[in-house]
Amino acid sequence: MREEGNGLASRQQAVAAEIPRLRRYARALLGDDGEAEDLIQDTLERALARLQQWREGDNPRKWLFSILHNLHIDHLRRKSRRPPHVGLELLGTDQSSPSADAAGGDIDVALRHLSTEQREVVLLVGLEGLSYAETAEVLDIPVGTVMSRLARGRERLRTLMDYEGGGDRNGRTSLRRVK
Amino acid sequence: MTSPRRLSESELHALVDGELAPAEKADAEAAIATSPAEAAVVRELRELNSSIQARYTYKLKEPLTPVLESGLKRFRPPFRMRFARVATPIAAALALMAAGVAGYALQGRYATEPVQHEPPFVVTALAAHTTYVPEVRHAVEVKADEAHLIRWLTKRIGAEVRAPVLSDHGWKLMGGRLLPDHGLSAAQFMYEDHSGRRLTLYMRKELGLENTSFRFFERDGFGSFYWIDRPLAYALSGRLSREELMTLANVVYAKLETQIPKADQSPK
Image 1 (cartoon, rainbow over the protein chains, first blue to last red):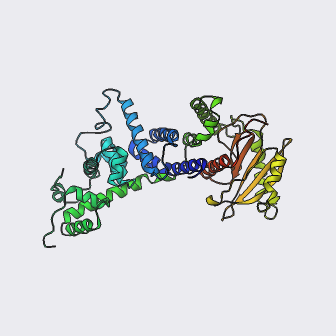
Image 2: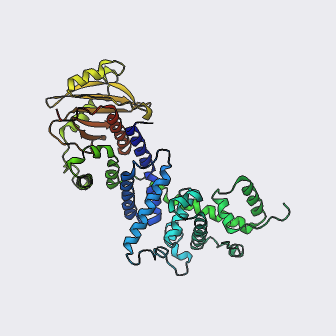
Image 3: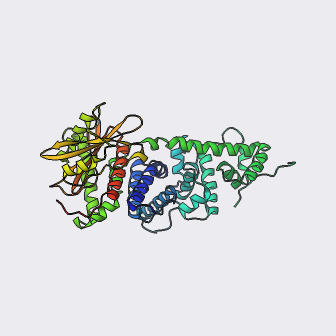
């Protein structure tokens, strides 16, 4: 068993080492530097309060991302007080038919057109490189849900980014959607 | 391999995301090889991921904001728990954060006149740092391998001093020296890394001020994280990035915490 102080120091370092990735993810998720910093600040604070509970050897990234995720949900709920649970899927989502104009070729703008839930999955997998299983754990949802959100989110992004331009529209649209 | 089956949408994503087992992957790759439409989708999905990554990479290199730094400073639970009776930890943390943010914000505006006055010992510590760090031959007074280094400085400082081992972080203890500091004696330990950068840990007895969390002081490109953990006041100085110095300050703090027996906790 290691000395408590050293254990804490190495945990602190492990947490500190994740901060750049957390910031990147928060910025991509929220689309706003200020809001992202607030979320990271809260994440650090909560991580601090729980540092003792974090078991050495646990993946700090997964742990921190799930703290961030839970806080993000809290933030969203506070924003849309009522009804508390409904609306997550819609927040930040423009349901009008998306067009390339909407994003202007900027993936950051395109991501704003996804639901929060789709955006989380698209970013955890595509930006952070988490596996489906890790993503499912971080978000506390089944792996199947990760996959379906991922598929829907990316489909929307491809449309927004106008990837189908160039001819092979048939090939693309004839893809079978598998549940 | 006669007529490869078509892949489901989720298989295409799984291929792009590296979620397929080797056999499945080979199978999927064979399938898309004969289907330009599916190959195009895979290409687009990959392109999507790389444009997401390219778009946000800049965040990885952004310096920490003051607010985040104050958040990091508070990654020191043992300290807070030990001094919990000073105030409730949360109130103390909030006060520190507010002071830090206000101080920093104002510092930015009135760069020459920082609102939050640094205690004199950190100014002395940084002066001692800049004086001795360039020394080639006489960087330290007593070398680290001399057994009496710690004993001697402990005796002269009037409180138990330690030089934490930082070799697992790439810093080798060179030795130390005794310095005057406003009528008190101070100890300076110097460390060096493989590239020749130097770091000093300065400490002297603290008689008046209360314990503090980490604070940062900077002058002429040299930075110092300082804190008071009675009976001693500490300053860790170097020409390092603030982030790197902060990390090391955390390490030093934690090591001092575990190395120094805290039996004699009362002041004096």
